Image (cartoon, rainbow, N blue to C red; front, side, top):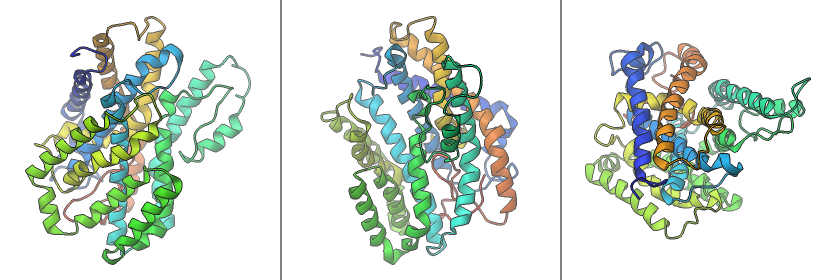
Length: 424
């Protein structure tokens, strides 16, 4: 149905609302106008010649996760159950976005290891990751703690479970945040933390597996990646392997030119749609999230390859509002659940969200999408940017920075690898 609860129209509407918010930022906020400027106009620490298409891709991936959770949230406030949407599309866009986030992380960091001949400095990598992840994660942990206290009946004295909560917070996403004041964090605003666990595992393993980042040792990392996936029975690790494979593929100019061709780009889009349609015959939309992992890898890998090869899909991914959303995608990804929860909780106290017509709910969700973008723009500027800028100032001689898909900014696509240590 065109106006049914799971119509594709709502995804388009919410995405357009976010792009409009990105356009407003680029048009009227000098900071974001400079951040997304073309070569020749730069903020301090801004790198010329970035992976602009990857910036845009990251923006769209973050928006897909927000729409995925907004679809779940419509019924979440009825019984507080966390159930995947009764729609293959709205269920699939979440895992596919996460799959491509991990691919970008694998691609950028493996490229940096490749350029250094397989040598990764563990302490420097750890310091870099803590500075990048910690500020926004600690803000999220503070918001979650405040919500837990407000949702409980205990207002005096120290919250129960505070020591365990602080210890878990110090893990910066390695572990889930526990209950505080006997209130478990709502999955709507904690459901993003689990991906940081995988990111940290990759970072901690990188100094060791990075030794295989040479042309002749490629099959070594393939064997290691497949073994880990089989041993842990978790297809999510294949996404990092996909990013690693992209570095090796783009090492060959002929492969890079072929992947950047319009025909291959169109075929990759058709493949993505085809896998979703085919998988709809087998996926159970109310089952475990794990069952979507392998199809998400298969669906997204070809599209990812075309983007890292330089395809911008008609300029959509390199459009300045798209790149603006890419810059703030870590904030959008990590904080959107809190924004949605707070706004929808207040609204649900006055109206039953599951009883209003779908078009009204998705119009509301589209408005909230602009709120998420606006809030994320503030946190990027005030919370993330000061740490990025300091790091950039200290490492100014290097050309760019190797960055995580969820938490970082990509670098120059002139070569298939990433030669960089500068963050911006």
